[in-house]
Amino acid sequence: MTAQQPLHEVSATVATDSGMLVLWDPQRFEAVVDYDTWEDELLEDEDIAGHIQAGSLVPLNVGGDGAFGVLVRAGTAAAPAKLTGRETAHQLVASQPYLFVSRGRALVGGIENVSADVSDGVLEHPVPEGNCAVVVHLLDWQAEAGSQDKGGRPVPGALPDFVVLINAAQPGHGTFRTAVNTFEAPNG
Image (cartoon, rainbow, N blue to C red):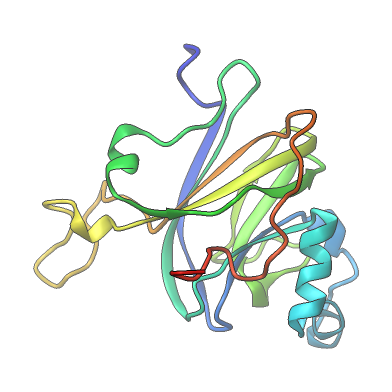
C-alpha cells in the first residue's frame, strides 16, 4: 500500500423510504430492537440531532427517498482519505466535518435501518477507533460521460451519489457540524 492509497474503501447502493441515509455506530444503538425502540431514539429531528452531537450518527440527508450509491473511504494519519480526481471533478457540494466517535465500525443505510444489527441493504465499514472527522460529498455522477445506460441507470464503474470520507479528528479541530441537514441551503 502506498501513501496515496486509503486504508479501507467499500461501496454499495443503499436505500431509504424515510427520507434520509445515515452513517452510524451500531454499538450505540444496541437498545434499538423494534419499531417502538427505534421511535424512542430517532423519530424526531431533535432525537437525531442528539445522536449527531454525541458522534454516534452522521446524516447523508438530501431530504428524499430513494436508492443511492454510497462509497465510504477511511484513511490513516499517514494516508488520509481524499476524493479522487474523478470524484473532485463531479463534486456538487461537501459538508462541513461531522464528529464520529468510532468503536471500530460504521454502518450506512436508511435511517429506518438504524440498530446494532447489519440487515440487508446496509453497508458495513471498518473504521479505526477514536474520534473521527466525517465529510460527506455529493457528486453529480450523471454528468460524467458514459455513466448511464440507455435507461438512465448507472453503468458498472459509475461514480456514486455520495462519497463519505472518514479521517482521524485532528487536535484543535474546533467545532463539528451538528445539523440534521447535511449540506447548507443555497444562499444560506
